[in-house]
Structures are given as structure tokens and as C-alpha cells.
Length: 272
Image (cartoon, rainbow, N blue to C red; front, side, top):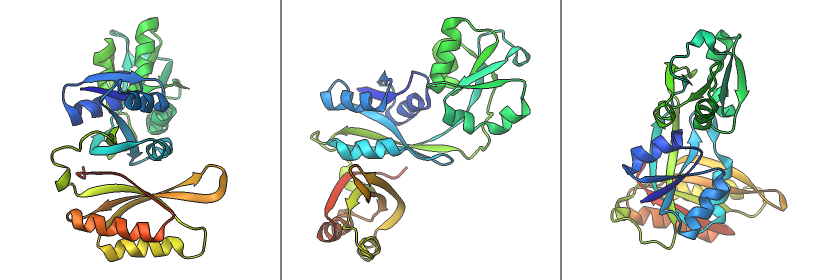
């Protein structure tokens, strides 16, 4: 299979793809929009996308794109996030004057950066891309903050491992494929689904929708709201629901369809 990711080879998305899919061909994309374009064109078989980090929160852009495209979530995975200082072989930490990484990664390594004030933190477009840049340019006074896989990918060397502020740092990823493809063989045994819905902008409508889900017996594990473009102060709500069997899932969807002005099931899958 060919699987698209947003970011460079060696990134956390690359690591998640290998963990969830095994040995597949990874197709790196510069932007999330490029990932979805590759999926929709059939250039790739699917994509591995981060949807939520336990510290940073949700990846709002990906929720918007899941709703906008005819795609389906087929699988969920969880990856522990570890950040490492990676430099050219032979470079010592005492020689490093700058560290490059994605702003989200830098924000998750604040304690280490505060303890090394002599080192400047420089925002970069991608974690693994920072290591790629350090190695391609041949920098000896700079390092990247990135996953360990990027050291292997680009010939760098980990000079300090595990510099993230919190050890309990995880990202949830989704395998996303075109919705017109046959479902996986084990789809009938799924125990979780993601649903998007929109309601009339009247008092009590959201409470009523959540009560319907409760009455259906499903467990609400996450709720996220996103603004509706062109309609100020109106929102689409995204919910993750745990359920026991297809009948319970259908009951929840039927209840939402009777109450909401828009309902879209984004996928059923096994909870990570």
C-alpha cells in the first residue's frame, strides 16, 4: 500500500504509519490539503493523519477536511510522542547554538529549552524536516528536535533523548481512505465511531442531541466544535462515540438524523 502523511519522512506521522500499517510505502506531503488531494485522486491508498494530541489538543484543520471530503476513518492508532535533540554525527551538545523544530514540538519542550538558555529555539516547518535541513546543509552549530526515526532517516545522531516536558504525551492518528472503497473485513466488529452533526441555532438543541446519544446507550468520549464558514456563531459538532454492536450505533445515528439538520458518519473503527 501507498500511505500519505503530512510532513517529511522520519516524522511522528511516519512512525505512526509504520506502527499502524506495517511496512508500507510512505508518501510525504507538504500540506494537509496535499494529503487529501492524494487520497481523492487515488495516487495513494490512504493517509495517516494526526487528529488529537494529549497535550496540544485537537488538529482542527483535519476535522474540517474530514467533513469536506468523501473519506472514511478506517482505523485509529496511538503513538507516544518523544522528542530528541538530533545533530550531525560527532557534534556535541555544547557546540549547539540553535535548535530547529515545529512550533508545537518546541512548545512541548519548554523545560529543556529553559534549562539551556544559551541555545536559541528556531521555529521550522516540520520536526523531521529540521533534521533533514541540518544534515543537507551540513550545520555543525545547529540541531533539530524531532523523533528518533528522523536520525535514522537522514544520518543524524541523537545527542540527547527524551527532552519532552511530559512523558505522558500521546497523539491519536486516523487511517483515512476514500469512502467508496470496500470496508475492511472486520468493520462489523468496530466499537467506536466519529460523527459530525449540525443543529438549529436555538436554545437547548445541543443538550437535546446529547440526551439522544445518552438514551441510545453510546458513550461520548470526545466532543469538538468547529465554526461553519460563512455562518457566524454556527458550529458543526464532532463526537467520538463508543458502542456495543452495530444496532446501538444505528440507534444513535437514527436519533441524530431525526433531530439535526446535518449528520455525517465519518467512520467506524476499533478504539486504540
